[in-house]
Length: 216
Image (cartoon, rainbow, N blue to C red; front, side):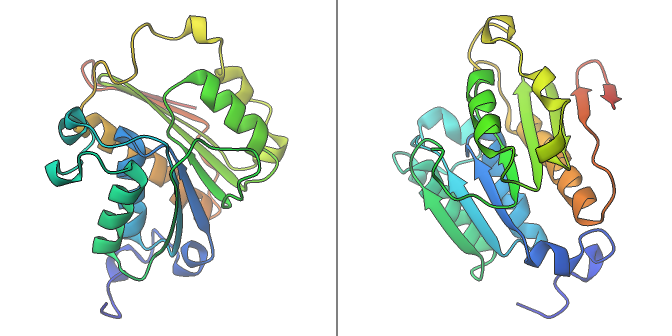
């Protein structure tokens, strides 16, 4: 590693801040894998990956996994590629569903498939994390919700609507790696805002097809 690797991002990603944080990525599918790789690129030192799934053939197209990784646990495959970007990152992998007793990092990235799962994880971790960032994707519509003070947050819970109100179909029924990459980028932007003590944006939505962006 050269000493000036992070020089061009130094005004945007404070080194002291990112080096002191453990980031937990829950779900390393389409969005979560991209989040993990981008975190590695910008200099995270401690990274935790949690997912129970294995790489399948369709994941090569929609999630960016390699063909030779088919059949591997997604956490192991992602950890391998994180280490390829930066061998010095401390990566902790858990090939399981998130459990309430798991110790997680200060920064939590929720990249799971369902509203029900998000609600359960939020209830478990709200009082234990310092920043919460949730990425959602449906086709070419992405939404990122963030909380810079989860312990006292009263807004995020309003986005956890009943599963019956969610869009029909699997979250991966219409998926592209470019929309996943955009979702991850918006999530990391909220993370770096938090690192710089800039208020996070609570709700950002982008409709690629309609060329519309809404934030609050």
